[in-house]
Length: 466
Image (cartoon, rainbow, N blue to C red):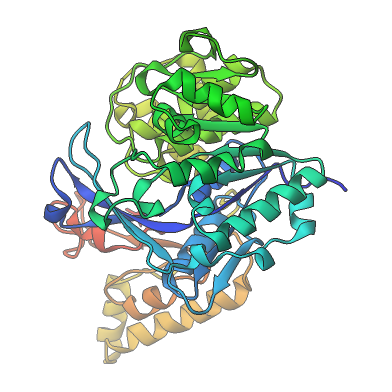
């Protein structure tokens, strides 16, 4: 069978609500930014940005957050045929914050959530057979129902000649080992968890984890001994992440010292946010692995993608495009705070834009002063201007017919109803910020002297200034 996909990830899918304020407790957060999250979801998006044909197998709720995940994945270029809608359960949520450069509190809202209802019936053999690889993550081995789904996917992958990978992704409280407020904790010893993980290790060609994650997989807190315990159960290449020290790969026997493994260069960047860094790392590693690169090169990709995540806000939004990664590797670190590197941020923005807007057909009806003057001269009720703009929107939608490359220019003062109705239609939407006829430029009052009014705009709206 022809392989039309490079990688299928399977497991968690959530909405991440990241605290907008940095340096405070979660209790003190006043606003949150919404992103897709969950390790397999992040990896699916991260690999898509690097040019791999990726897909996700999971469940989401039949509600707004579930639709957000599906739509955002599609915008990132991820195949969503394996994303099932659960009619009974809610999409998982995670609240996260940046306390300082060492503390990153998070709370998982995953009680009976949609992705934990994933079952064997959700695994389609034809879909799995179409992929070159299947990537599992540890959390979905924690429950018999989800574990059965993962094991079926792995069995089918191996039957159809696909490679298999495990990101250990150990979260103790998702295994029921600690309370809801302990989401930040990355390691608690558990013989039961070790036994469950070890029962599956022989199914993988690649196993990736931090030192602590190999401790739980190997059943000991001696890292070399843990790696050797895993090696005794699996012939997979083992990749051990070591934080600022980079990562090492072991394709064969485990040596006495970790430094004797194959490695790639690390990058001296500022630690801003470690959440999601492992998924960025895994995305880069999979790119190198599936492209047949030698381990030092694959680890270079992985370390660089992890560095992007560590230096930016959010998980998936932080990950680089392939062009961005190549730019970074060729130029090197200029500013250790990558999110403040102007040239790099320009490449990030330009190469991760959603949609193809190379050809635009835009109907402009953002006129304000002109229409108000016409209404006054005709003795007409100015309230009818809004109705006129609704008709303009109807015309734009009819011409677009659901096709890309069409848009509107509409204001939020006289055309508010039309502007709000245009949301979610697929139209490109531009909004004026200038007060009509002002020279020098004066902004519409709704924008505010500090531009704070822009925070009320939907993310897809584009500023237009004449």
